[in-house]
Length: 405
Image 1 (cartoon, rainbow, N blue to C red):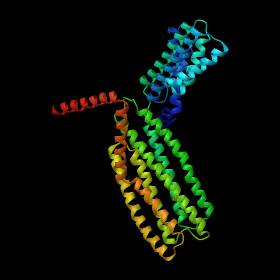
Image 2 (image 1 turned 180 degrees about the vertical axis):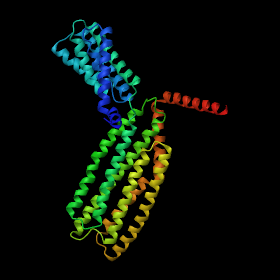
Image 3 (image 1 turned 90 degrees about the horizontal axis):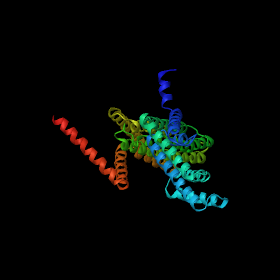
Image 4 (image 1 turned 135 degrees about the vertical axis):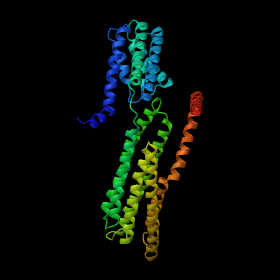
């Protein structure tokens, strides 16, 4: 097996999750055997399995929620054991109360765990001993799961998210190239409709890319190896938002070309010179979309600069072709005004895509999003923000002292 394949397998989410979960569950069970009074403390490995996630942020949040769920269930069970004991009607009330408490303490997907813990504790004779043993085992599993991700640092999934964004841009490029080739010739209505269905299916691709991006965003949170996590998250998220807007506009273009094919069949969509300009324009926009994706996913400054230069050049060529196409369509409408609305729609939709990918527009959008996210963080966690500001100021002072020496 090649080294490249081994590295790819090492970063595969399924393999990473399987190995971490297995190791954490085994260690949690061994520790619980020595600390818990239960003969088979299976709650500890079960908790470790549920807590360990692919990212440190997900592991921490899952651990806190699960511990809260178990502790809440134990207290509900103790209260019921003191008041009514175990009967068929008290069991129903116990489940109802546990689920309500689970929502009150905001344990999210672990709401059923509150009721499960309460039923297990209430069903034993020695409620007190079993209850605190279950809490202890839950804490062991949660701590081991968190320690597993702290000692075996999870990977940062920015590269995978960037690759998925670039793959999406290349799929969009292939579709635009096919649409351009068909616009330059005689396109039957059925073929234009097929391209429209392809454009609609891009929504499923965006959902997959969004899932990969959410995993990358989680891997950047609370990760000591990442110094500019917020910047990475905002750059990738705004980039995906732009590509999503472009795919929506592309779907509208496909709808326009389909309507035009229906109106003009069996004639070509455009005159030969106009069709050639449309093909060239869609080809240049397709290249610009890939350049935009590369710019969004570039992490090294030199790569980002070259990607921005390439994108600027692609957009400049596309704008020149757009202007030439607008003049040709104007002359065509003056000769034959049929379907002039559809011709104008094509130009309007092309302008929207070019405007979305414009470098100045993107820089402005990026700054606005950074300000918005930073403001939200300051409002949500003012104390943590103050600590981060102090650390940042301390680093700057230390760096200035070192430079002065």
